[in-house]
Image 1 (cartoon, helix red, strand yellow):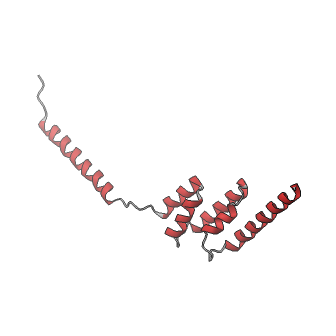
Image 2: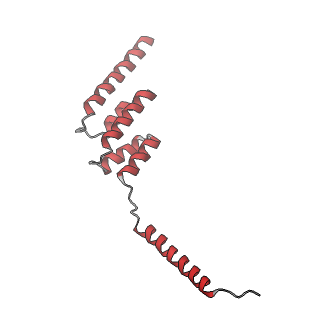
Image 3: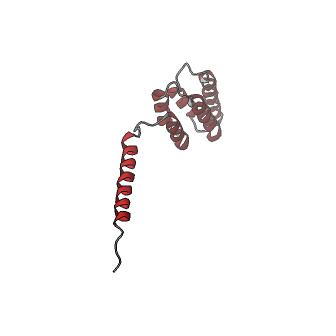
Length: 121
């Protein structure tokens, strides 16, 4: 039979307990609220207008605010989803610097849609 090295066993147990305390401390003290960067990445990953609106409401002074607006505008231009620019107008604060541009794009989209349906009739 082998003799157990009790020092090694005790040291292992102590290290495991310390590791568990550190991990539980990190979990307890980790903020549950998303940071603006995490929220921005979530919105861009899903391109959800609802999440974008929540982002603009929750983080009105975020450094990612203009970048998110640019990303959504680019996405609408690429995807050409009817009503996309109007949806942006509904979520974007009126004081945003790109609001007039999006308003113009929304009006242009509406005009194009009206003209294309008018030609078919």
